[in-house]
Image 1 (cartoon, rainbow, N blue to C red):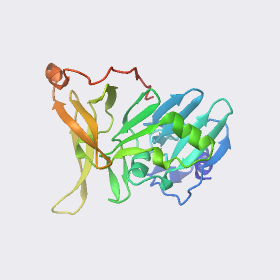
Image 2: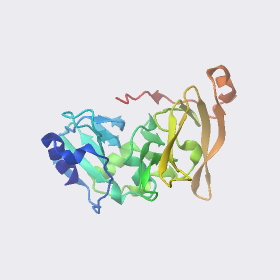
Image 3: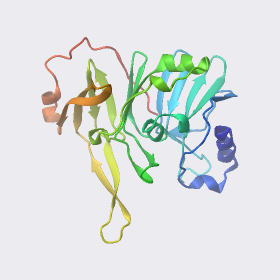
Image 4: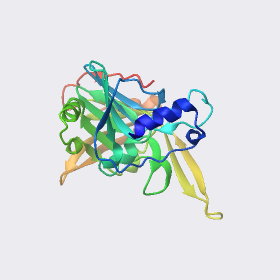
Length: 259
């Protein structure tokens, strides 16, 4: 019960919590605990459906030591506020790319109807062995996921993902979906690079403030790919990124409170 242990450590003020945390678990089983109270968090993606709330990523804060590092959330959480129960989905059992991304933070994300969209984010890439901005875009149906969890059915086939596209490596951006188009505004990319003289990792950062990215998705040979990609660098030319038609009637876009 890793999450319960995390709660105990958080409230005991253990010094183990003051550093970075790399997510790992060999558990493939959903487990539950009573109540829906979780420690204070920052940087998570949160999606509400009825009396349920789905939490992806973020970091748990140690309120006694707010100046220190927080701890990555290494599980997807499904909170049932009606029955006062929390379901914990270990990320170690999730498909590649999704597991690392969902253990990160500061995504660009939104929800249309009951479909969740999570782009980018910053966290630990286990394969590379360092923290970076994820070039990943993941889509899943919130209601179907919740139903699968409640009925203890397999849910891993519900996730669609653009696995590795550097154009999607954005953290702290804002994502909106209008018709078939995705619009990403602001954000940053933080990527380590190796210093050629010392072999040490140095941090490279690109600031996307004032930048708008527009794209659609297409399926090629069963895989999702980015299509119609375009960047507008200043608000004065945002109109250049606007399509003549949105291909279908724009659906209602939910504005999510990232705090």
